Figure (cartoon, rainbow, N blue to C red):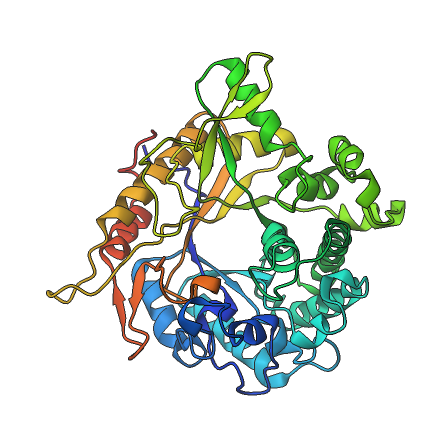
Length: 456
């Protein structure tokens, strides 16, 4: 059986990871420009100065999307390309690039889904405190207004932020991603609160500035909890662990989602973090809980959870056991039931349909002697994960779309260009694009609306 006829088949990428042209046409530096040029921060000193040169080669890339039969493309807009200093008058050349790109996508029959912020904060704003400065709420709102005014007549699907746990967790708490800070837990909670308020301000700006009806979300991520068995006690243990907000870090999914969906922070987190909480007002929560239209979720991996003797959640040793299949990055355990449980648990809790805004496999892809890029592991990965999604749909879980990460091999943050996620291989020396075997496989999946895929 095929997927539902209104299911959206897409692929994704992000501005800093593919665009390049880091200092062209008025673009200002982002935190990732600064971070990646610091010795030892990124694998072999890689950076996004050129990346996939998408800024100059976007027509070729849109042509590949059309060849793939892609229905939708999730892209991000680079804030420092629009406002080089993060505030003030917009950069006309930066806006013109996205204006042309949106038109090109629509001409190719590809629907743009636009993310306003995918980690590339203008460096000038970071020097003013970044997310720890409450002013970012209005900075982001002003930026959203500019983008909505320029693109909102054609773009109908939006996401405000990509992966808040990574922004605050890896960027501000653990220091592994830009801007590379190791702030106190309390400062990070304050930054997280400002980020959520900025999300709400962005929603307001998009609704006010876009023409006609739009659909808006925020793209979250986490580590899925997968019940060790189908026993009710294990399912409930996994659910409880998935939405627990007591770990002293930025990865508690409900800490981010509950305020948006319910207007309240989770009670267990408020109790656990009581001494570290920032000032939180009723007006803050009203702003944060602006209506969103769907759940967007980036799903890659997960671990198994069972109920212990007292019914409490217990992670299986190692999450999966020795030798489980994985991608080339250590965090990517292959867990085909991760999307099933992510969608089921979240839609039950929050009552909205879910779109998988990212899902993909990193591999050691290269051009073979025959001139092709053979990536059977990726094809198998996609078939398994889409099988998990199909099972969710068959069980009545509202899943409306899937975006493979990513359309092109690209700059994988602190890992540089080492790990490849793309459906299209990029030779970073020549910028030659070579569609992989997975490209042809996914093209057939889209063409048949997943008719050959079975639930797992």
